[in-house]
Amino acid sequence: MSMLRMMYLALAIWGAIHPMYYFVIWFRTNGLDIMSMVDAWHVNAAASGLVWDLTIAAITLTVWIIAEVAVRRNWLALIAIPATFGIGVSCGLPLYLFMRSAPVK
Image (cartoon, rainbow, N blue to C red; front, top):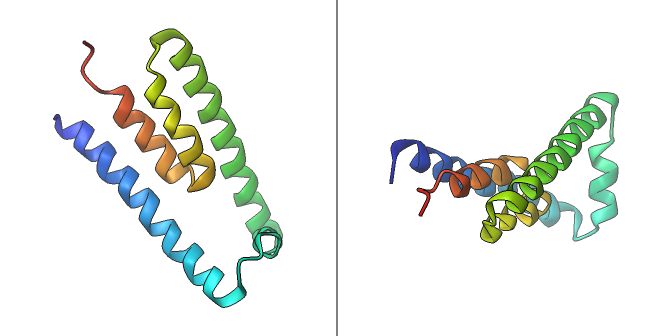
C-alpha cells in the first residue's frame, strides 16, 4: 500500500473517531435526543455557518462519489456516502479517496 493510501486511511480513521468522541460526550450529557443536538448546532450564527458549510461539502462529495461510481463501477466506494452523513465529511472524504486510489485491476 502506498504512503498516500495509508495517509487517507489514517485520516478516515481519525475522522471517524475524533468527532464521535464529542458526539458521545454530548449524548451522555443530554441523552439521545437528536433534535436537541440539531438545535445545539444552530446555537449562534458561527455554528450555523459551520453546519451549512459541512452540509454543502457533504452533498458535493456525495454527487462526486455517485458520478464517479457510475463511470468506474466501483460499487464498494458507495460506502463513503453513509460514512459522510453518519459520521461526517472528516471520515467520508478520506475514506472515498482511500478507496478511489486503489490500484486499477
